[in-house]
Image 1 (cartoon, helix red, strand yellow):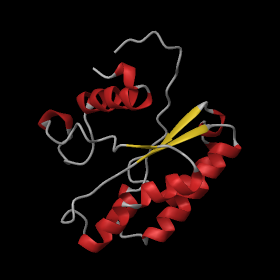
Image 2 (cartoon, one colour):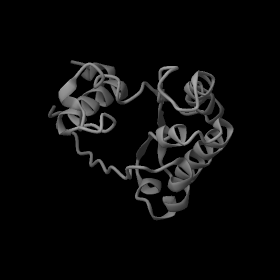
Image 3 (cartoon, one colour):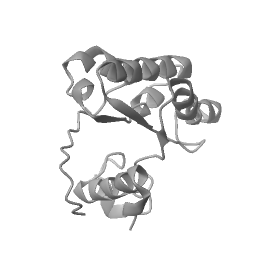
Image 4 (cartoon, one colour):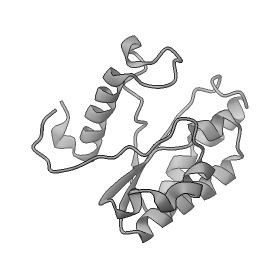
Length: 154
């Protein structure tokens, strides 16, 4: 999707990262100097059953650090079916609500889950069934552009 925008995007995600990993390396990130930072982190915390209040506190600190560095911040939600996480359905329900809670408390917009369009697309996933392929990243970019500016939805 060519929109003629003079934006440069930098993906600073590292596979396997948890929110505490992001906090540990955030000072070296390009994010604090970014005009807009989209934070999407927490799935690995959920897979490791990190207590949800700890994830919430880490996300709030990440957002504050980015804002203090001059970046506007948006938080991308994550969502898991009750059966998906090893910690069980009660943990999944508590986890699923944390993005709205943090976004509200920190006054940042909460975007829909970035992987939402990938679920029905078998070619959008790597063989691990967890990470997107290049085709999956195209779907993510399309959805993200539409989330940031609804006029660009196709």
